[in-house]
Image (cartoon, rainbow, N blue to C red):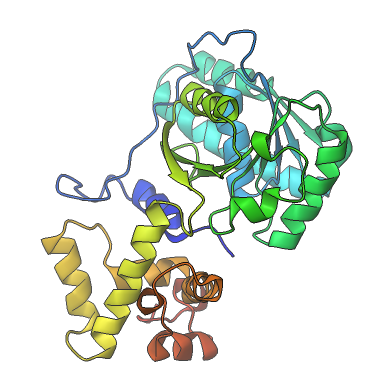
Length: 333
């Protein structure tokens, strides 16, 4: 599945932060203060991080780790993907540098160069795992693909290397069960855009050790993120609450109790939401929303009423009306 809904929602808010007042917003964005970390790590702490995946999420994680003093290796299967990831990082660093050091070109240059000095890239997945303390997986949202990667890495990584998945939808216990280090395995769910979003969900399964958990808390704090902890439950915290809210908005409209426009207006003006539920669903993609709910329904761990199929949503997806990316969804663009 694609990156979960709030991640995209926050990205939209960040891009429009100068246009919207968030004084009453229940979901106001937390903008990152992008200074280098001043935390002094101890000898036992994580120093070297390898990130598998160089897309928006992977590149964002690489950037934030590097600009806060970690030595980071970005791994992907093709050099072309690596180059795209580097462009994502370069553009982001340039924006941050200009914002943080407005009239000081030397400081801007120093900030960017220092961050890049902490990053190296690799297309050989096995080499990427050598001598690293933490592996963060941010590849395609497919259980078998993630399992295959971790199964291979489990055989070649140091015994004390911690594994973490940035999955936004898949059970950590299912990803980790093919490894021999389930006590050193957890979820580390960043939000998009990673450089701006402060929140990281740390997902503990039943076998995650306290030492692993504490080291991941330390890593997120050294990245200037705010960690929250959740058990290995569908959707974790944020999306477990947000997705049913979006689905109920669709049901409300489908029953004819209010129009999509009035529901969006009500949630923006009455609950302080910067985007209404239909605007948000269109922004993320109706196929993504449907895929999430279908997966949860199949898993059977969430109340059936919360994830019941909705004809309006299913029909729009079937018609190819997926939201903004297709030009039409609940609204026409």
